[in-house]
Length: 302
Image 1 (cartoon, rainbow, N blue to C red):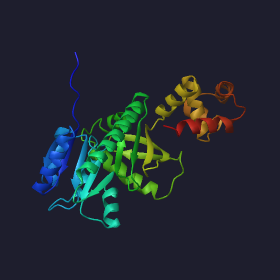
Image 2: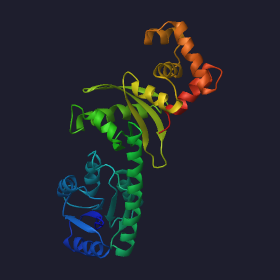
Image 3: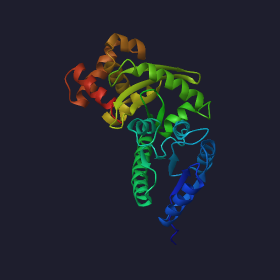
Image 4: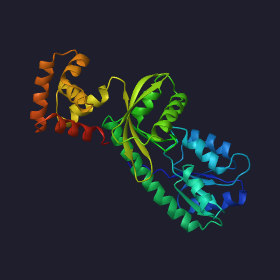
């Protein structure tokens, strides 16, 4: 038995009933379902309840304008990856940049050319599906990865990150806001990829490892519990090490001596050295520097 394919659900936000009617008709003709909203707050409520696949958003509206509506949508973890296309009569480049900085992925100018609009929607729906597949794959691999803008605002995160931050805060709001503030200060100091930051949140102590930037100016991070167990397990899985060998290698990558590692792991320096010899053999390297370089490469990939 075959089931009919679900139609794409598009939320259209515009204070002009005529514009809503025109876009609604175009989407219906293209085989898509439309949700309609006349203002920003209504759009946010609908988006939270209905989870559209894409949002068409008028830039200039009374009350909550399109730019602020987009920013508030992107602050909702469940909505942060939904693509937003701005519909605007503005042609000034500064206003276009304003929309993109608010979280939009594209814009179309009014009067709307419906064939162009539908074509752009299809492109961004396809991109969103590929992106969501990548996030799901990262989560299945146990990757607690997320991305922010330069000012620390949330862009996307794997479900594992949401689980970490939501253990005692189901809304994720307080933890994400506190994280954003610390990230903004950290990024202002231009950290190198691989750098770490201790993250102090009400829900616990975590560490962030900065992974670098994407082509879309997203800043990537891995979220880890303070004890480093997540990265140790990552090294163990990817480099085929034992649990203890991966722990030793993790601390080697952080510049610790055998004596310091022994104190951290409650091992004698001789035992640490024996584990390190096995690490060298398994990785096919001859010294600590080469082993640390392999670990560093592993920890900064997603």
